[in-house]
Image 1 (spheres, one colour):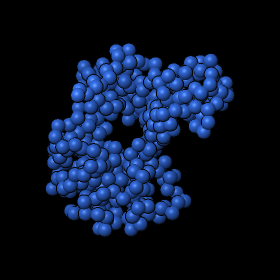
Image 2: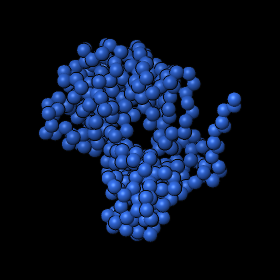
Image 3: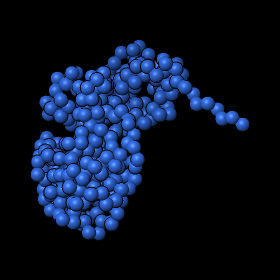
Image 4: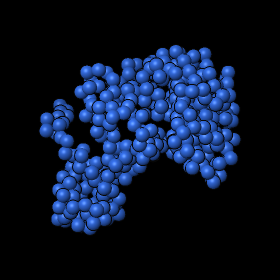
Length: 324
């Protein structure tokens, strides 16, 4: 008995630009929210989102043909299949052309320069390097913070540490965005006090997040770069969605700041998946945005050693390190 061969996409399917842009337009207009509960006539949808009904009809009919929307009767559209995923906050943020999703989409036009040089060419499109662009556009920076919170914060703050949480009383979330991860940790562990470190504008949004909540007395927010000396003496230093934004020298510098700030028996925890063996040579957006890279466990170990840290435990979702 012979197995069936996998379906090979056609060249037209592989080079289609229409579908990804139609998806992004629908998300940017908030069409999924309008039809999330029941199908609606395209004229009603267009009126709700403020666009031309004929043009929207063409977009939604194309997406219905791809299985993201359903058209139960002519000119009436609702969500279908994977289209419901468009309502998820991290998906919506990454596709919304009015926010950071617009940067994520347009930066792919710099791929030829990246392949030629091995360096990000973000500035070719946006006039600044990625981090400078966020500083120059607070609205985009806020959208990026929202995306990072939605994409990287765990639903459960009880992170699976090798030796548990009994000895942890203080946590520093390095590059912690607006605090979604730290909030989850503090709610899971009432004995823990937390410090969030991020750039001043992001730190201000984090302060707003915690102000007036039951966690306000257990949180300190520090506005600074994580390349500068970090608040010292904590039991645990967390890094989530940070190292993959940087090449090895910068990643080592960030880890070195964690190492020098940690107690002699403090722990640095890097959240993420770091497979053993050869690194998966994936083409990830971080490479085009800021020159980042994905790493194998061996590559992370090498970077950590340059920073004065050794890997003590590696799980499916995090890696633990200690000062050498």
